[in-house]
Length: 177
Image 1 (cartoon, rainbow, N blue to C red):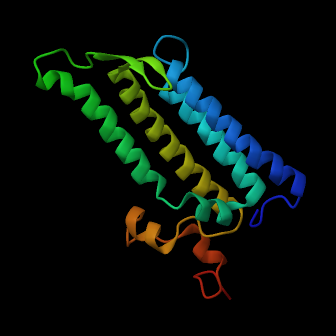
Image 2: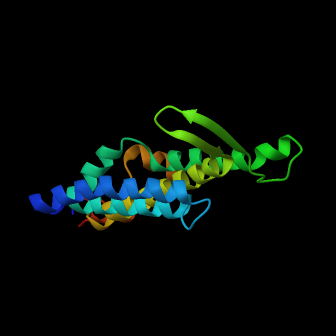
């Protein structure tokens, strides 16, 4: 699908659902330490919202809409999760030790209880969203007849010795007659 589904109603509903699903993902991530939820399931919810958006708008539009390389987002999330895990060990505590900060009478929020598990879940969330978004973009473009990787991505992620699968379908490719 180069241009997405041509239904105005579907596109409008999906754009509204994108917002609602990501609000629900935020809820899942914030409640994840004490109840079912957390960064992984919140990242999957955001991945589903990106998938729906790609169906409604098309792969090229979603690629322009994201404006970042999803793998870099995943790398930042991995770094955040790793630093959150290792930080206690640097101070003589156990690996993945949790620390909590209790803030009293914060304007507009009341009493806040913030802890390092939220930072770790944030890192996991970014990893899952980055990997899921990259998979959706690459597989979606490939199945839509578009080049799976942009020239910049091709330079970053593939070997100079490898040939594109799509190359045989292009004019002048090795299988052109």
